[in-house]
View 1 (cartoon, rainbow, N blue to C red):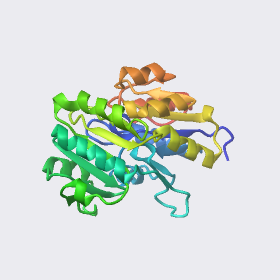
View 2 (cartoon, rainbow, N blue to C red):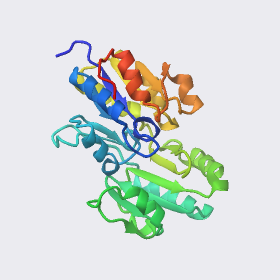
View 3 (tube, rainbow, N blue to C red):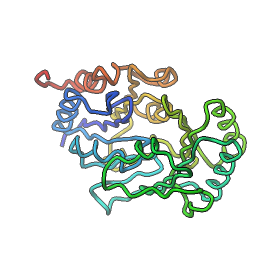
View 4 (cartoon, rainbow, N blue to C red):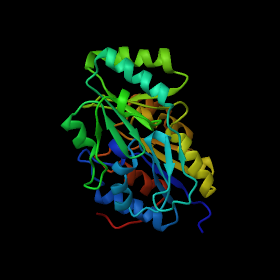
Length: 277
């Protein structure tokens, strides 16, 4: 066993994935080389399990995965692994849905693990969330009536001029119970999870499982849902395309997701030797 093995945490969108939502051959080769040398690679994403598992399998991973920004930490290949699911209370969810109705947002979506509840039919949103043919069907209809379990996350698709009002409402009335983050363009979706949930929480649990100290955690990200993870990791790396706030807390800045930022950083930092792709 390598004595100085690192835990490498990869965000997906805007980080591991190119703008075409693919993993580039060079970055994949360098991740595999790092794994060959004993380093541990995990995915840490805001996406649910079903929208991440294809990339997990593509990389040939056999590690735990952090989904929903830390609200679900589980092991896709080991049902005995001590999974942690931290949904928000249903009462809080219903209050947020009511606020959305009052603000007349475009749509609201709730997820309970891999089950999806959509307030109003919207083919564009369905297309985003249906990642494979085996996905469970959406339950479509008023969330006030249909949502009966504590949701893992709520996604709100607000009207452009309501984003600030909505986030202020969430801060004013629900700050002690939830965390909310905004997705980047083109969707500008507001994602809500239980208070205290973030990727750093997931990373901490996985690092403890593998007995890897904080200084040997390398984490890559690009958006505001990566802030805690990049700040927590001993080697926090912001992508070249990352938001300024993330670059400010990162220890390193690498190339963009279109320029093999992850692969280039790992090659240099871990001194990986590979044939050029």
